[in-house]
Structure formats: C-alpha cells, structure tokens
Image (cartoon, rainbow, N blue to C red; front, side, top):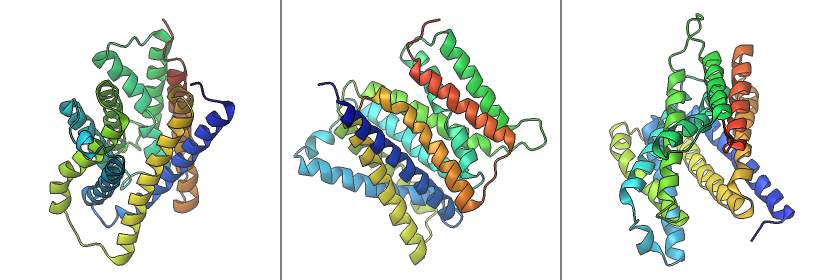
Length: 289
C-alpha cells in the first residue's frame, strides 16, 4: 500500500531524529574512548543491543526462527563487517574530530556503489562514476596527502566507511533469504561474540561516570536503530536515504559546540563534495551512461 504524505513526513522526522541521536552517541563515544578501549565499549554495546533484539523476537514468538537464519554465512559476514566498522569509527574518534571523521565516513555510499557493481553486477553508469570520482577528490581534500598536514589516522575513518559499505552490500544479499527481524538479531549477536575476546583482553573496570556513558551509548544505539525501523515503516528507503547525510551536519554542529572543533576550509569543501556526490549517486542510482 503506498504511503500517504503524512506517513512520509513522519518517516522523515523519524530518520532525522535517529541521525541526531547517532551524532550524540558518537560524541559520547569520543569522550569515552579517551579512557576505555573501543573493543570493550563496543562489546558491551552489542551485548545490550543483542539482548534487546532477542527480547523483541521472544515477545513475537519467533526466537527459534531468528536464531536459525537461512544463510548463516551471509549473516556472519554482515555482522563481522558491522562489528569492525563500529570499532574502527570509535578508534578514529580518538584521533579525529567528529566533523572530520564523519565527513570521511560519508563516503560509504560511493564505496557501496563500487562494491555492488563487483559483487551484485549492478551497472554504475557514467554519471554515477563521475560522482564516485568526485567523492574520492573530496576525501583527499580532507586527508590532504602531500600538503604538510597529512594525518594517516584519517584512513581509519575511511576503513570504517569501507566496512559499512561492505555491510550494506552483504545486507542486500542476506535480505533475499532472511527477514528484517532475523538480521536485527543476528547482527548484534554475532558481532558481540566476535568482539568479546578482544573486549575482555583490553578490559578495564569502568568508573561510575564511565559506566554511565557506556549505558547512555548503548541506549542511544538501540533508540537510534528503532527510529530507523519506524522511519522505514513510514516511507520508502530511497526517499529516506538522503537524510543519512544529516548525521554529518549534526556531527559538525556538535563538534563545534561541544569540542570547539573548527575544520579548515579544505576539509569543509571536501565534506561538501562528498555529501553532494553521495546524494547524486543515491538519487541517480539508475542513471544510464
């Protein structure tokens, strides 16, 4: 059944709120990673998320079904990319500002387009290829190789973007075999299992304030994902996709207001090029050469 205008607007409001929550979550993560290792933070976060997802599945009487996916290999691959991505972005926040990290991370739709062409045989087209090339230029303006201010830590954020792009492509394959609830259980559960050895290896008992941040980060992750689900229930994914770039805007505002970040003009220009290229790629995904 096609969505009404009111439903689509509600979906837009839900995804905008989710992006704001994710930006606040990353700001809290940036504070916490100065004291707690990223694998420990993300291990706890994923176990909390997994417990919540399992609870939802149990309430719906589908616990046994979601624990037996039709394509376990794909679910494992998708969860592994997701777990690696959240650790890498937390690690990047140890060295980069919120705005800089998210500007680089915003290149993931362009990477996903390239990966989909290889893994799924999707046609890129000349216009979309130009958008990918422009996005690469934008990333290089932020990284600034050979300009005396090169920061190799920027490649941590780019690696996180690559992992998230791979996660999306693997998710599109998994969606052909397993429904959304199965994936929303499998991703945090497998990710938590994968991160537990590393999380326990670097474990340091958090202080009371640090536990508060860990709880807040975990709650924000659950709330943000629930709002994303609600958004997709109200509006098509293609309509909502451009709103993902609100995360970059929110992260830039929080970085300036909370941490006093002032990106230079090349970084701002690079972020704008990446966002414009990504939006063009998303909105013209079916463009022909």
